[in-house]
Amino acid sequence: MASGVKPRVKVPKTAAAGEAVVIKTLISHEMESGQRKDKEGKVIPRSIINRFTCDFNGQNVIDVTLEPAISTNPYFQFEATVPETGEFVFTWHDDDGSVYEDKQSITVG
Image 1 (cartoon, rainbow, N blue to C red):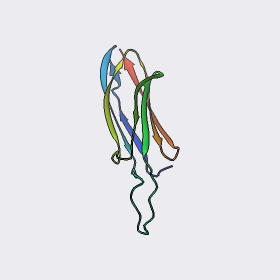
Image 2: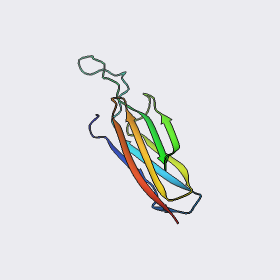
Image 3: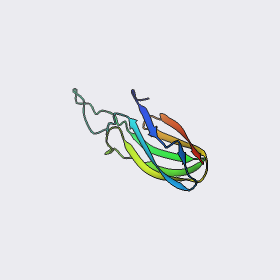
Image 4: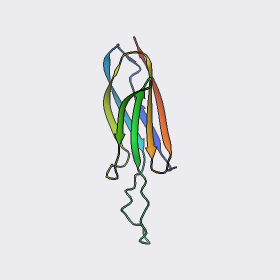
């Protein structure tokens, strides 16, 4: 597991039925492409977040595959339509097999 990895998510607390809400996510992760070398000339192993997903009440909202050219601390902003009260589940997959997750609820009124 990479050190210092911290997901942050911003989801509105409430919305109207059928409203499109703006969701912002950021995960603190150093990201290493696997193409650089250390002081001794050895290749630094690749270490990136290679996949990001968001589900709402079990339905997939977004599924992104990330490549080595992704920047440090990847940020995503997207819209999701919320038909009902529920929970968003955000998941980031790391090259080393680690999975980072955050959950945020939203109330439809």
